[in-house]
Image (cartoon, rainbow, N blue to C red):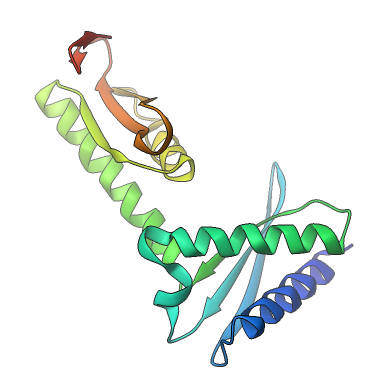
Length: 167
């Protein structure tokens, strides 16, 4: 399956799901790009009813993406990666997390104390780790369990106590 066929399949399945969810006013675009790990696609759904598709903290959007992945796997044996986005919500969220990571790293360097970020999804934590991976003055790690898992940004070479434990 070539790139154009994948885009067509993603657009078709997404439109069918939205119609079954009784959405009438929407536009779907699919963009693709290649990197070292292969092709990645982004399905962007433009709709005035975005709040219904995104949900609180993107929970509904995550469920929509999961559903789309299951339906795509039923249509083709070929595995390829894609993200579902609504009104560029994920892009804005990515930009916001990037800004949070950079500002928190500046605070860690300035104060020489670790900063613990709010609980985040695995995807969000990964974005923070990747954003700060090139910063030699800080290191990041994830702590906690389940939905309470969060990122800690630490100054390099410092032993600090978090929750009464030396790390």
